[in-house]
Image (cartoon, rainbow, N blue to C red; front, side):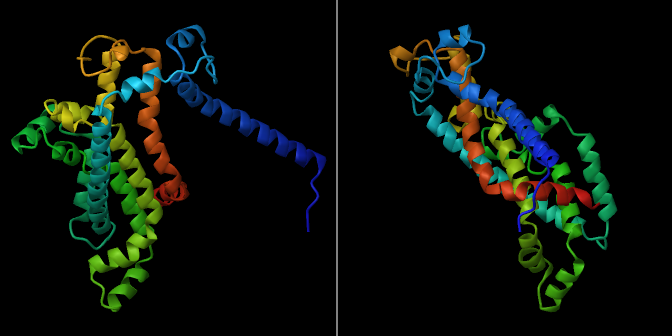
Length: 294
């Protein structure tokens, strides 16, 4: 049976839809402008402060970016670093968060205090660099993957989520012969998909957007640079401040400045955005549930 709405209720719904539509348009319009500007000419970008459809369609910036296989190699490096780094992050986070979620663990309070301490104080960039150097990890992927292997904040949220799972479920599993690792694998992890998906996305985005670690720990290995570092170099080349363009076509010796920046944003953003729809259904639930119970 359809419930008849009053005139005031319908008016309120219409205003809500209009308000949400305007806010959504304001939110997405900057990114739409970036996409449009990446296909526009340099002259049009300088003359028009804002537009969604360029007058003259141009792929000049993209042809410059993809003029060599350097970007393809960098893209492969980013995928490798993101996939391996996220796997290491989640393994370290889960294996530490699970025992810390057990109140009967000896030394639990001390460990939690150390984790919380690390959220506010760190060794700093230079001591971290010296540690990486002494471990002979410079110019290797391990220098990027291991320096940020775990986030204390993410660890605390995952620990809280594990604590919210009823202990009776794990006790039943142990009565059936499961070990602690078996209970974690068969009971806890399947029930923790929302929080695992959420923080996998957080870690993956962090690895994908990171560039400073590669510059710091792999300055002499450009073949191992992720896409963000290469795109940064391309922007520097487009501004004519450094670099060697001899490997590129003569037509692309003087790439456009503004459209180049827009194209770089699109190229670096689109891949990670394509991952989000697959994790979106777990996203909100994972953040909220993990943050409710201490």
